[in-house]
Image (cartoon, rainbow, N blue to C red; front, side):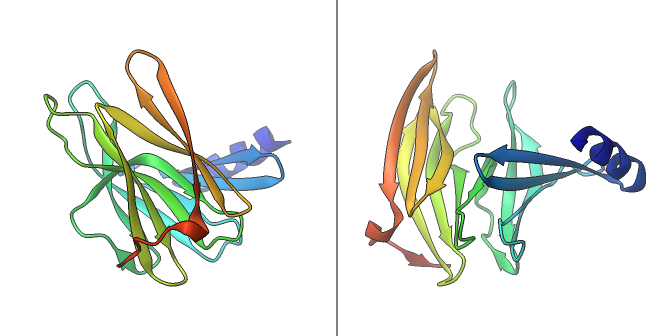
Length: 167
């Protein structure tokens, strides 16, 4: 039945909608075909993170600027990864620290508290990628991924973050 719904949406809209399910949560990813922007809707539907397409790394993935509702994050750039907490308060991203092919990849965990309007710049993956995986009961699970096929799992209790910065 989801295939029928997606077919209807594709025929009636300029955007391609995808639904992803993780246990009891539903995450929405909307990709605008005309400009390659990505939109991630929070679980309660009140917030949208907008990843604005900038360019692509040579032989690599695209990168984006970030906007959440009316909050903008300047010229900083991010990967495609976005994960909302189940209470729609926090949103985790993969922030890129360089687009220089010879220096990268160099990414870090980036978390936004949409209620208090603060941000947290977390662990850096030198020559690797940070991938937010799951928010559950105030705990963020994320991976550090390095070539070739090396994955390190990490856990961050969001309530224990003390290094929040105003947006």
